[in-house]
Length: 141
Image (cartoon, rainbow, N blue to C red; front, side):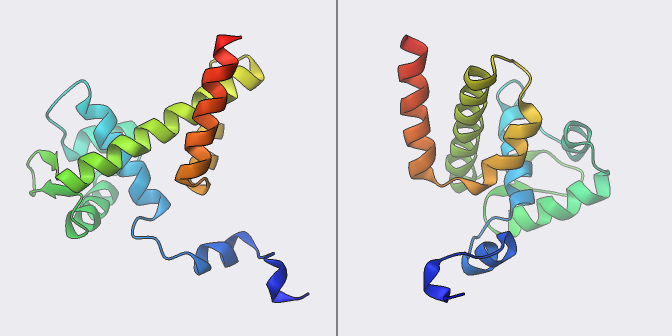
């Protein structure tokens, strides 16, 4: 097949896209922001509990987010967001909410979380913004 056609495997598309955040890093950052909406204090145990992972796994991911400049995390201390983390995390929450509202409208259900979690990493900002516009129009009808 001609490479100009643009068809790749999922892994091929991922390799062609250089992203600073992995899908796992996005999940952690999104959860930190979600927890911070109701509590300004986020600890490794809170994060590991909410994401159903071991604290050691959460600690490793927090180190990556810290090194990338999204959070400040000290060993055994609170996790805080940098400006970069706050901005990116805000978008991740927005993206999640838009897709969730769309799937709930489409399926007439309030239980679409698993589907949202599976697809949210693969849609770009323009698609999310357009999907938000569509959802807003559909909700007016």
